[in-house]
Image (cartoon, rainbow, N blue to C red; front, side, top):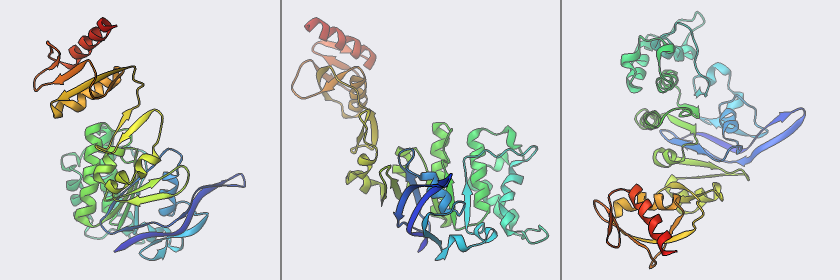
Length: 328
């Protein structure tokens, strides 16, 4: 079931009387229970699109709909019951505990007197459990790490109990373990609760792994939509991120720095160790080609060039350098 869609949506902003169009004529849709990752180069309009979808920013033209209703026609309070928005701003509330901050997400469900429904405690406990915050519930926000703080903001969005959750760079400034955990938790939230989750990210490798759909924005205009693997195989992903400085490898979904080789070498042997060997060789300025010398043979526990044996890649690079200089 389609939860959110746009109709000929044009986004941008007006500054000093001048209109700046960022993206135009966007026709997008997302279904219940999907995790959509919005990716694209800087300046392509990711944050502008999210703010427009959430109703924080007026579209230049066209419309966006939630449950078939025009977002701009929905009151702020009712919109807060449909869309939870998580921005990159840090929550700074003195003396606030994790549980009290998460409970703030129930604000759209309070009555005129500020009283909440009786199920608030249940929502809060479910959110704390889902975000692995049970043991942190009584702690102050000021005592948390960045990763824990981000999980609190997502838990707060969860208890808001909206069908749609929109997040702008939820993994920004986090280390790798926390980035992975946040993406897994969001994937779990979408699939287990049926919420529609749309997030922008620069974590291209994680987006390729976690997203049900990718909205791939291009700086030249337009959004490519599809399953991540389809966008890789049809070349759209590579087109969006073309650069002289790096190369996208569709075989494994990784980006590699585009070094300028000045030597050639042949490599064969252990497939599992091949990737890391080739990476080190490229960094050292070697291009791997067939049927040339020197020949590097990768074995299960070492590397060989002719009769010489090397126990690490570091030793291999030194030996290879000596071999090439000797040949010169």
